[in-house]
Length: 354
Image 1 (cartoon, rainbow, N blue to C red):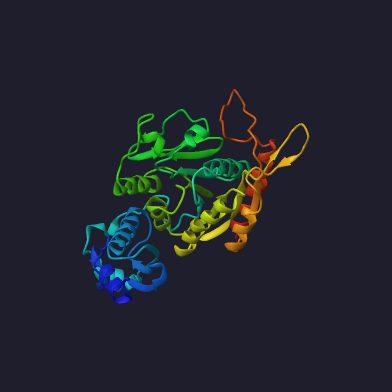
Image 2 (cartoon, helix red, strand yellow):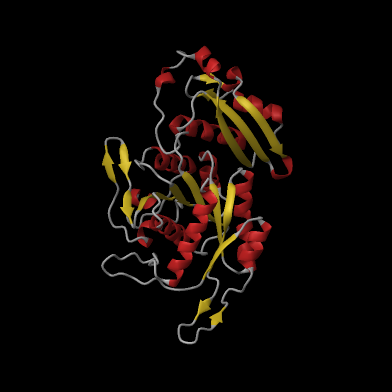
């Protein structure tokens, strides 16, 4: 496992992208901590200016160099260098007057909420799209990133059949049900497999954050890939801060696996907002009897283990489809599940309102 000195030496060779000076020369490595038993390295870095593509590039470079040298997971926090240090190196690089734009600007008040699961098939994407729509119904400005790169499904779920627009160098997201949406599905041929390697996928995710004209947002919902693989970790390390919701089913095995996704959030110093239990039961419309098809207790157990709240329990039920505005996975506001989603959206707003 890496030592603190080795981490400082490796990261210190990387250059501050704004002033083009190695971090070791600017004293840009503020803090290093290591959890040896989990092979996790946390680094706090100071750079000349926060936000946008330069910060993302430095994040990715730090993650890459530390993982190549033995770290399993990496957590990164950023702060700005003191102005007198920046002034000392002013003029060293042509980047000094670069304008930092994009969703990750330090002045952007958007709340990032990642929807995660330990395994596939638990309805994570369904939860993501319905929470996004429910927040929009509450009057919030909402964006949705389909970050499940290999299993993108959000456009189909929301009934989106158009492509994003382009103005200059910016991508204009598709808006549906009051939610601005961007997805890998928009950029691959229909039914074509995604065979890109990690760095290419990382670049695409970066573009989703900094090259899309999101406008003013209150919330950006991210539909993460299931599990704790590289793409999910990349998203965690890209974001300056994020809150996370873990989706599980009532089955004990699903809840056990979902705990790993919660552990990743904690390792990368993100906040867990709560747990949502999907497929909690089936209730007959004829008799009213409930059948607990996948068992009981998984959501409550997971919330207890992660020391967070169980935001809601969702039964198995089809949405009421509107043939004039077809969106196969969106629950109407007056559907039983639509009301449950609305309640969870209200809880999220209460938890994130300062």
